[in-house]
Length: 190
Image (cartoon, rainbow, N blue to C red; front, side, top):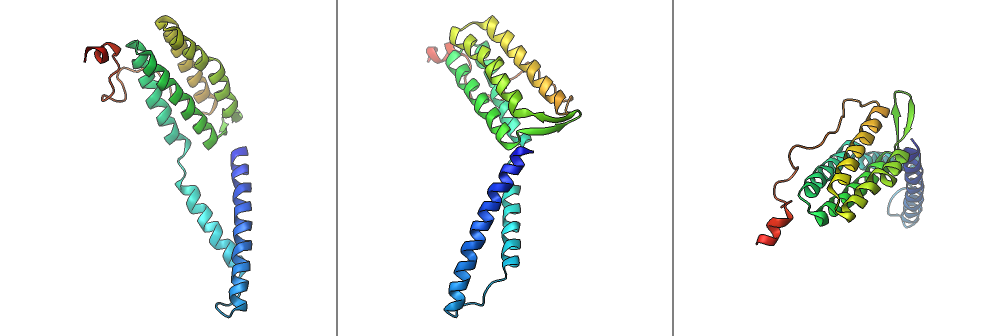
């Protein structure tokens, strides 16, 4: 909700600025006899149509969350193969993707009212993601598995809070991509 208000305010500033520039340009053109003076209402309507068009081009949170799932799945396979540099890369991508998802929609309506998705994401980043990072840094498989499972539980809790209990993440059974070599030993064998 707050995100939409901020976007609306920014768009309003852009519209007012653009209308002012358009009107002063049109006045100058009218003085020079090039075109008649413009109707401010028509200019505002035209700009609002453009704003609506641009808003329609922005990806929604579901699209962004597919990136989270993609990288989080590959994180699992990199760590399971003890490819810690690759696991660290994928964790970094997951963190960036989740921040992107929050920028798209920081607050959602849930069954019990507004849900502060930004707050949940920050908590996950500071707890579960930090535990994943530590396990990767220390190259501790057991700690990684525990932290990964805790992250899945946190994701499920967020999905529940926003009224999407059917989104139940689990440990992946196959990687999202087959072109990446997850096995660190295979790299050394070449």
